[in-house]
Length: 466
Image 1 (cartoon, rainbow, N blue to C red):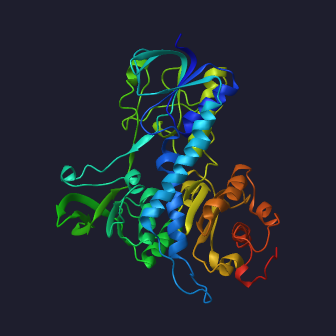
Image 2 (cartoon, rainbow, N blue to C red):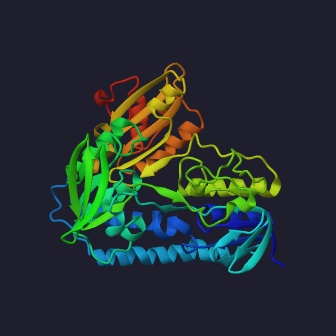
Image 3 (tube, rainbow, N blue to C red):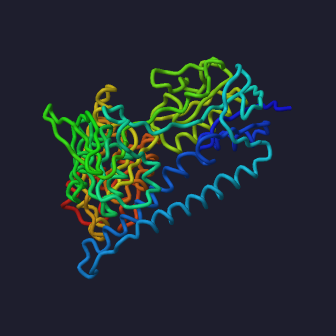
């Protein structure tokens, strides 16, 4: 009988976290995957391949950077870089997903598109599966902007950018969020002439403005052309290139490139699920509406990851949500996802990462806050590695000194942010951070130094002084 305690629809981080939790709870479970191979976005077309290529480009581009004793610059064999990236993807998909799935004794794997045919049944490849409870974790898909002439030009998304056969001479990227900035710098480091168009007034508009402005300057200093307040209007093909017509403050401009990449948005993968037959409601963007316990409008259906209307879309967020949704579905618990201490990271060089409230968010929430922005040029390890680009901004309570948020632009910020997560999560004060002994010389000292700088001029202190 095709009857299950739980049916999971999806094959990425949220779905696998749900499957592992269901297996631990001894529930008879079906995992139904369609679209990307098992592993979903992160391992196949997201974190794993993109960070591999970013690292290859970083090593080559900055080889010898700042050190007088190192001569010459490395070059990248682009075709081999793509091969190397895809080989790693295959290995990690097998090791972290295929093998893991094979060891989940209570989970049966189905490949095929799932469609609800009733509140408690889905159809997969002509076969009906009955489930008492459901977790939907189907993720999202890159969405090109609906510009005039779109149907007459060729374009790529980040998925295509990970498997190009030939390095393009020039590229226009629409969007300056994480994808646009990472892929723009990646291809610039490989040798492509890159132009980035951002509709809003800043790159990475949801971070602190000081950090956003500094990151834009660093990218422009490298030679990447960035236009903010750029309202893209139309596309056309001309002499083998894509021409993008856009306006900045009402003034028309054009830019052209051998390749056009859209990095401006995603849409939840809900279109073909026939959710209305299960009683599951979506919002105006087709994202599944869930409550704080990740339960949908249908009480027996839960959802996790990019397919929901929740904020902060990360692989690890989806994984946590998948775990919580499954436990709530199977055990009737009422666990909730805490988004207040979920970090974000952008893997440009330097990295941009942060956790908690920004200055503006703290003020809007009614907090009496104080802020301090501390430059990496005063972090000894940054001088040692010859990369002093970056800032640390701490948002704290003006009276109690509790830290509400920490945002970091600097070398290895995506790794440094986890200390910041623990500070925000545990409601630590500036004094608590200062009282914590750090190893010298390390980049992680930047957080302690930024906290000290609220009370002392760190530029005038010796190393390792409280």
